[in-house]
Length: 238
Image (tube, rainbow, N blue to C red):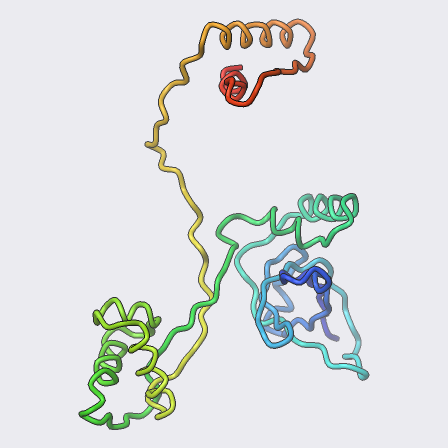
């Protein structure tokens, strides 16, 4: 018995924004659910996606080979948001992933970093390769690092660091890896203060009128004014 997952993938090309079938590895079979954020292989890259359906297979397809889900993230959408995304996608005639992305928390946004680390086994570096030795020592002391980290730490130009890394990789001294990291969402400090909004007499009159209409009849009020006349302040004040 195999578990197959339908995954809405997050890719740029509009024609590729579909749901694709992936095999669920045994390590995830007991924990994966509809709504889970996962990483999957897509062409020659790894992308994020959301599981939209799970089915059980008695045997794997023989006419084509299904790729496996790479890993599961610690984020899952509840069924109500999955249903809402489906309804919006159907109404607007677009891919469901476009709306699933809107339902995910900001920290779900990820990026791929290229990092460099020491390969197993030690090999001699020529004394004349001064930059290479510096780069090697930096990685040895600090662990996996990006080219930008090394450039900033050694105060060496990024182009020189990259040239040294390329040479060290060819020699088998350094290895290049890829690491998925989460982008930090913009957070407004709890102590931030924008100060009170001082309304003009006309704005105060509009706010009082809106409040009276709403309290008496719960009707909607249209605020009309040219650009820059202060409609937003009236909206905030009301």
